[in-house]
Amino acid sequence: MPEAPEDRSPAWLRARRGVFALTWLAYASYYLCRKGFPVSKARLAGDFHLSLPALGAIDTGYLTAYALGLLASGLACDVVGARRLVGRGMLLAAAATAVFGLGSTSAVFALAFALNGLFQSTGWPGTVKAMTPWYRPAERGKVMGLWSTCYQVGGLAATALAARLLTTFGWRSAFLVPAALTAAVGVAVLLWLREPAAPRASAARRALRPTAESLRALATPLLWNLGAAYFCLKLIRYSLLFWLPFYLQRQLGYAEGSASYMSISFELGGVVGAVTAGALSDRLVGRRGPVLVVMSLGLAGAFFLYSAVAAVGPLANFGAMALVGFMLFGPDALVSSTAAQDLGGTAAAGTAAGIINGVGSFGAIAQGAVTAFVAERYGWPALFHVFIALAVLCALILTPFALRERRRSYSAAGVSSDG
Image 1 (cartoon, one colour):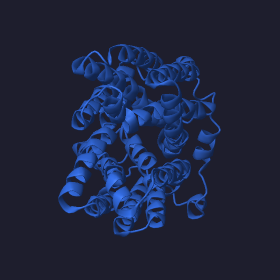
Image 2 (cartoon, rainbow, N blue to C red; image 1 turned 90 degrees about the vertical axis):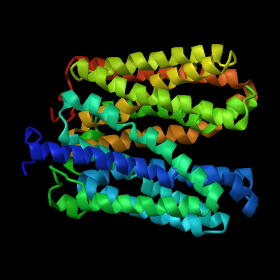
Image 3 (spheres, rainbow, N blue to C red; image 1 turned 180 degrees about the vertical axis):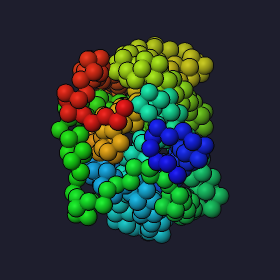
C-alpha cells in the first residue's frame, strides 16, 4: 500500500481511519489504569490505615514519574517508533496496575503507581507521533481537535468503570479489570498500528540515541515556549479535575452526588472547545497562535465570570464552568498535539509532544500545593484570581509563538516542518 501522505487511495484512507480509531482508543484506554487509585482512595485509607499524607505521596510519586517519563518518551518514540512505544508502554502500565491491585502495603502501592506513571508517559508522545504523518498541516487542527477528545472521554469512562467495579466487586477489581482491558488494547496496537514513516534502521536507533531531527527540535526556543504555556494550562486543568467537586460540596453546599455531576460541566465544555479551537486554527490556514492567545485570554474572562455567578444557582454554575472548560481545553489540545506536530514534523513529533507535555506536567505536580495553600490561606475566590493571572500569563507566553508564526519563520528558528 502506498505510504506517502499525498496518497489518497481508498486503501490509504481506510488505513488512516484505522490509525485515528486505534490511537484514540489507545490513549483513552491509558486512563483505565489511572483512575483506580483516585476512585479507591477512601477504601484504601480505611482498609490499610493510610494517612492523607501517605495518599498524597502516592499521587506525587505518580505525577513526578509521569512528568520525567514524558521528557524521555518523546525522544524514544522518534527512535523506536510509535507502535513499539505505545504497545509496550500499555502492557507495562497494565502490569504495574495489576501489581497495585494485588498489593497490600503502602510501599507496594507507591512503587506500583510510580511505575504506572512512568509507563503512562509513553501514551501521549506515541499516539501524537502515530497520527502526524497521516494528516497534512492544513487539516491537523480540526482532526487533532476531534482526536484530542480521547483524554476527556477516556477519563470520564474510566472513572465510571472504576466506580462501578469498586462498589460491585471490591477495590482490587478496580485495578485488575482495567489492567486486563488496557493490555488487550496494547496487544492490538502492536499488531495493527500502521506507521507509514517507520523509523530508519540506523546506528542511532540501534544505540537508542536521539535522532538529529529530535536534537534540532530540542534546540528550538518555541518548543520550550509552548511547554511553559502548557505548564500554566495543566496547573489549572488538574486543579479543577482534582478539586472542583470538593469546592462545590464544601464551599457552595452541594450534596456529594450533585457536586460530582456538576463537575462534569468542565469536561463537557472542554470537548466542544477542543474541536472548535482546532477547526478555527485550520480556517486561519494553520495559524494556531491567534486562536491560542485569544482563547487563553477568554479563559481569564471565563474565570472572572465563574467567580461572579458560581453561587447564583446550579444552572449558572454549570454554564459558567462549561465556558471555562471550553476556553481551557481549546488551547490545551492545540498546544499539546497540533502545535507539537507542526513544530516537530513527522520526524520529531514525538520529541515535541513529549517535551511540551513533560514540562506541562510539572504544573500538574505543582497544582496540589498551589490549590491547597491559596484556598486555605486566602479562600477559594483568591484561587480563581490565581487562575485568571495564570491564563493571562499563558497568553503572554504564547504571543511570541503567534508572532513567529505570522512571520513564517519556522525554518529560521530551526524547526522542521512537513508541510
